[in-house]
Image 1 (spheres, rainbow, N blue to C red):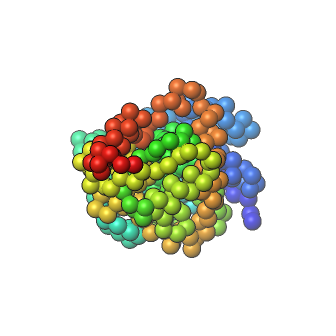
Image 2 (cartoon, one colour):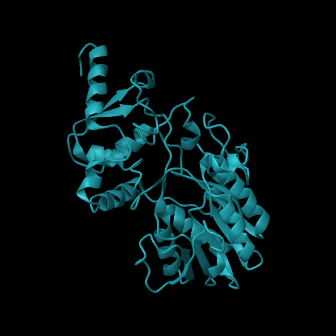
Length: 341
């Protein structure tokens, strides 16, 4: 394997440090370009270029330089792509852009492949550009990347989980199961669930750069179709406690205003407005070398990081149902069932 000269736009947020660490471990030379405000002490031996992508001339530090591969991690603004291309076009062999499964047009449709219709791209200018939603902005960014670089690699992750995840959208479940007791579990056991460990994602992205692989890829897991039951019982297997699930059907949860992907993270169901996020087809990514670590590895690594966080962050999760609301919904369900447990 030939060592690559890699430029990472961002690199100090959530997925960036994992990507940079893996690239360095593989012997590549890495340059970071960002504002220097998020975790500026990371990677003290790595070259760092400062720039603010929101201001005119914000990419000037990149002028006159060449790289084999660029990883664009945080971008949701099409103008950032345009401004970067103004100084990088012709000086970069491959551009890897992190998009999202939110690019797809219909979130209620199951099993989107990479050829599934995407949303209309956000306009570049005018009032509608400023108010454009996340998905259309990502679509516009994808188109700009494809137009600017000889090898354009578009990666569309779903729910990215593991150490460093501040959204708590996956972490809610191992945290709740670790506490034990009766747990509100959503829907049917085979309702779909998808996620990708941040380390699986970033290590694969480094390999895509090493091998010069272009194209568009859904980047989620696990390797085979998984139901919410398999996920929750798999997490439970990591603990020896009195955790027990009470499975509450989707219609009752909807009546109680308990939503998929919000109060019940990761979970979706046929017809939900989130089902595309949990059923993306990943055959193309697997053929391009995407691999998956075990659920136990993801759970234990995510929880080790979770327990290293400040106590206030551990106590107040950003996703999932509150303990009080969980008790209310369970009580209402048991009452409807005649009080039996």
